[in-house]
Length: 363
Ligand SMILES: *Cc1c(COP(=O)(O)O)cnc(C)c1O
Image 1 (cartoon, protein in one colour):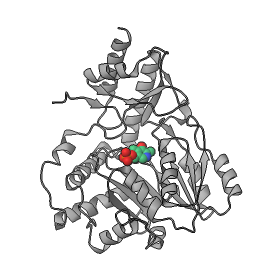
Image 2: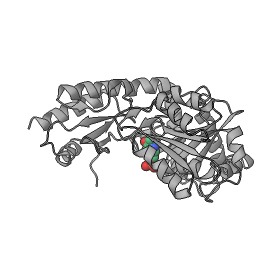
Image 3: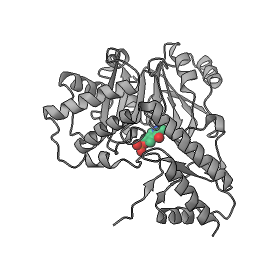
Image 4: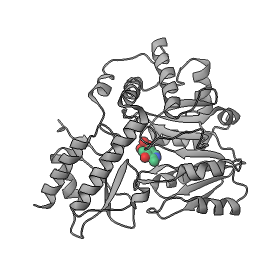
């Protein structure tokens, strides 16, 4: 039996007891009550995105977050299109890998992982490649915890008639995003990040007019976003293939709890205060934050190893014994580790974590 611990990772994350309890039943996948739950959470997602069902739709896709991103990349971009990908971390790179696999023509704008994507660099590329039809970027690059300024970049790109794709996997529900105002055509996130559900599916908030023009473009059967959308519309919330029924119920509960907490604004505030508490406390203990405060997200924080003797493996295992699970680093330039603060994580948890860390490093 595994000892209980608090997950300080950016999804899967620590969920509430009531979210876990919502899975304690074997549900039917095509029953009307179940379809009603799917329809209801699709509407709740549009509310979180601050858009109306006249113009936008929320389409769930079975699988982890990557499946949702791959669904958009592989089924909404044609062989005649050209995709630009802004990359400052592993998740941007992953989109580039997808484009390679599907033979989609793409240009990559690669920025140092410690720096945000800027409108200036994007503009430079758009001028250089006037035939770009689609643009993809990451909102919170979970690789480092940097928050890219989607709100500065996407409206500008979209005004050029370019279809815009935002991987907001680790930020949606935890950072306010107005999908319409920010001119996002496809936004992708998943069940196990800031909505605080359990892993099992991803979802895409799509502008209907754009999505409806993609019929027949899919290169796969199971990741066909248009087809999943069409089936849900035709059949009132029916998923095309077996859906993760337990996960869907947990997600439905998690969305209620997001509302009860006070919505995205309140959750954002809690995450932000967790992150500030964590960063300040860690700096007092001698750990330096990797990302400049100006671009630091409230989701996850990268810390630089305090010295050459620092043994992450050891540190990880000691913390786990104290009831906290953290994350290794993911960048090449500097040795780092990461601590997430999303999920059912509160100020007192951060206080306890800092006490445990202080204890470990002073041994
Ligand atoms: C978590 C995450 C993903 C998806 O990862 P999965 O392991 O497939 O769920 C994609 N992009 C970002 C920015 C993420 O944080």
